[in-house]
Amino acid sequence: MSSDKLKSDHAKVLYALCASDGEKPDYKLVGLESAPVYAIDKDGLRAVVSDTQGGRLRPDRRNIGAHQSVLHALTEAGTVLPIRFGIIARSAKAVEDLLVANQRTIKKHLEQLAGRVEMGLRVSWDVANIYEYYVETHPILKQGRDEIWNRNANPGDLREEKIRLGNLYQSLRDADRLEFTEKVKNILVNYCEDIVETAVKKEKDVMDLACLVERNKLDEFAKGVFDASKLFDNAFLFDYTGPSWAPHNFTTLNLYEPVSKKGKNSESVELVEDEP
Image 1 (cartoon, rainbow, N blue to C red):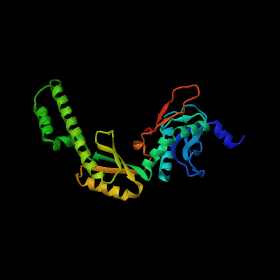
Image 2 (image 1 turned 90 degrees about the vertical axis):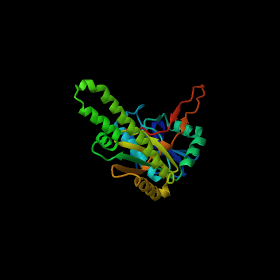
Image 3 (image 1 turned 120 degrees about the vertical axis):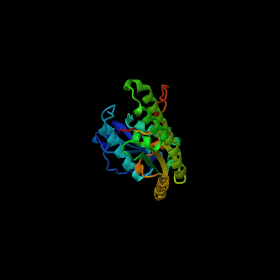
Image 4 (image 1 turned 30 degrees about the vertical axis):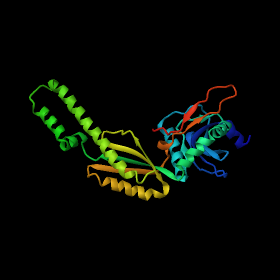
């Protein structure tokens, strides 16, 4: 049995969609389950896949890491639409049908992202203790903290006041996050095609931004980050990453499986990249 026949019969792990140039690429990439990565082309579009024997993929660190490694390599080579971890097609024919059924919307998204890459910018408070930093820089918080410390009372009697003080700290920090994020975005908007705010994950994080940047203007983007950093003192750390990230924050495309002849409902598949 030929290798092409074997590939056709196996289920496919999907990694990304991109435009086809008519030439079969030799990716030299290894995907999930140590399977080679290859292309399935149809009508000017390409799905990047690998074969799998199973019907479900475990979302463990090893598998998600392999998926992301393939995406990073593809993004460095050109414009791709990332597919979230764990999407499997039943066969090569199912992949081709998916490309045909969604041709118009896929091409539209590829045009919107052509020549652009995603850059990440994370700003954080570079201090030893974020709460103590806020006490020293916000007099209203320092006053409340000192009043509790100077009061001769049992710890249980101060519970409500400590809760109010903690809520005040959180509200001050959240308000600063909003203000500082707007300051940075007002600078970066001159260097980006689009900016998406993503949720901060750590207490010391000020903001986490995804920026869509023209690939040939990365030096200008770096200048924009530097200009924005000058609005802040040494208590803030600016860290930007890319451009090897797949543009998952700017991919809002939904794929639909072709409706079967039996009239079953279509199933939508959102193209976003899962995080480990």
